[in-house]
Length: 363
Image (tube, rainbow, N blue to C red; front, top):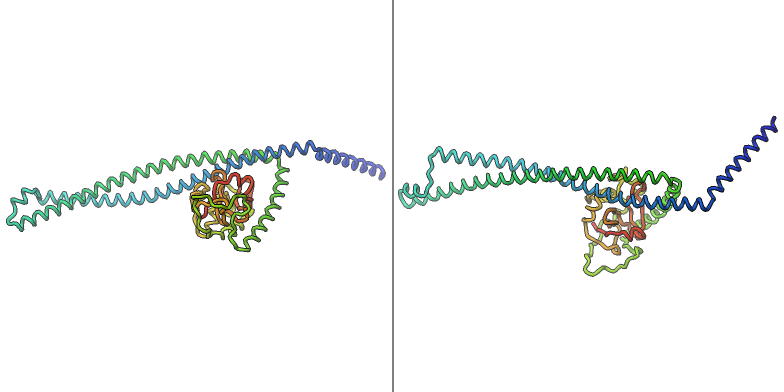
């Protein structure tokens, strides 16, 4: 009985061993491994293209938000001004009405002939002429005020109507961008699911590299010395006629940004719960009292232009037509929130990023 069970166990173990050998052989097949690696590279290339498109779409969405907030702010101010102007118009209209009633009930006759014929002396004539001129000027001022306030009311109403139309257009634009972003995200998730194993290994290697980069950056920051962009691979000479940016006074943002390494990318995000690229920059600078719009395109218009060879820690670095932004940390590196599925991390200003560098700005 026991020997029978032993034989069954041995047979089972032999079968498992054979299965394992077959599985190992299949995974070790160079052709299969190479095919999977090639597939992973193709999928990753597609994902990178989607990420580029998503980055531009997200920042266009953020810029629409900035424009929308500006319109809403202008509308609030315009409505306030409209109320003030309407109140002033009512006062001026009442003054004009009272003046007309006064002139009618007092039977005023301020014609030049009446003044001349009614005068009893030269002094009386001069007094009458002065009174007529004063009254006429007062009436003219009242009429001018009424006319001016009416024109202002019409202008402000037209401005409000225009702003409302622009607001509707931007809201529709935002909705279209949101649908595009969500569609791209769905495609990205589908592609990622096809190479889960490869992605897991890539992420593990990336996490190890990030730990090394973060340690090196913290060690560099401990020196507390501004670091120019040496090692970026670009000549350090300033192009003739270019603007020389003033020294950077915001290098301290680097230490703040480092606190958020590992925070997940969330499109539209601007808090430690999740950041997109411009959301990270605006949040970090807000910690030192500097207000920047939540849009890489809008941020690209801030501060002073600085060449890649003159970058200092705390400068903003922009890529692919200003659709992506990060914070330069010195040593040829920058910190940023790259794209969906990634986290706030340190990257080198070389290779892909140097070839797609759009400019630097010193705030």
